[in-house]
Image 1: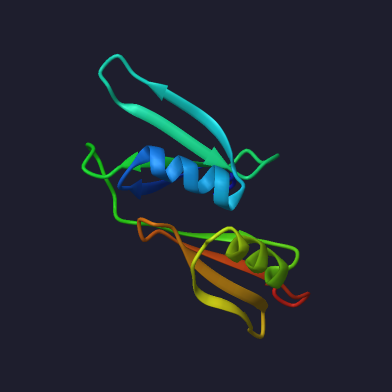
Image 2: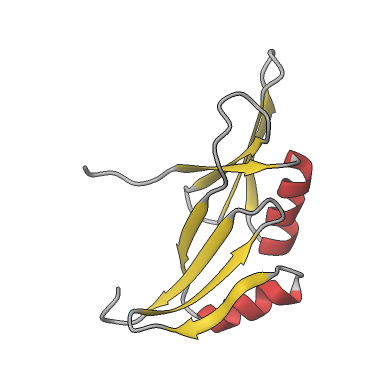
Length: 124
């Protein structure tokens, strides 16, 4: 199948708290924040300059899914981790060398995990 991921669903306890976490601490931008006439709120964030959107789904909402795991490619894993730690992001795995990449893992306040990979030439 050809294509690209455009949205990824994350289950959060509070859309407002998650929106603040991703925009203020992680540095993502808000992509959308609209509420339907039926009261369903659609909130998305994503990396600046990219089309990917993370959908911040309120826990308990209809069609709620389990917490997610998202993988991101970065140019310098150690530098990116230091920047996020300085903003208060907690890592479950600090940057470590693997045969294919330098990797680190952090979790948001709702238990969604993010792995950052700085791929080496063989793993790219």
